[in-house]
Length: 116
Ligand SMILES: CC(C)(COP(=O)(O)OP(=O)(O)OC[C@H]1O[C@@H](n2cnc3c(N)ncnc32)[C@H](O)[C@@H]1OP(=O)(O)O)[C@@H](O)C(=O)NCCC(=O)NCCS
Image (cartoon, rainbow, N blue to C red; front, side):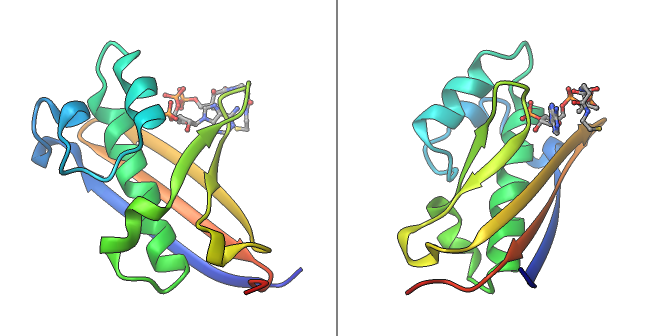
């Protein structure tokens, strides 16, 4: 299956509000917030998810105000993946996240063609 898109994003988590995990203005889903709240310091995990959504918008050539359409899921080993909006059915994505110091980063690769 051919590579059809790539996106990368870097977030400076010091620019986020201290209570970012509870900030309704940020494009996080309820389950993403729940995961981050379970961490001693939620902010790196919030920043990683914001980076993933920005990277996804770039991989799919979408404006960043559509980042709410993407959700970060984790498998039992903690490996992240992306849930896609219905209009991207048929595509396969690969997501990698990292956070260290003040920064969080995400890379998204997209493969295949949308069925819609
Ligand atoms: C993957 C691994 C290297 C990440 O360790 P780390 O640098 O300390 O990073 P953290 O545990 O802080 O996790 C950073 C992000 O890596 C991602 N991650 C966690 N486990 C992962 C895994 N098994 N595979 C891929 N990504 C993983 C998560 O998205 C996490 O961010 P989140 O908790 O906000 O979702 C570590 O979990 C590990 O050594 N796991 C066992 C070996 C393994 O599965 N390696 C995979 C290939 S390197």
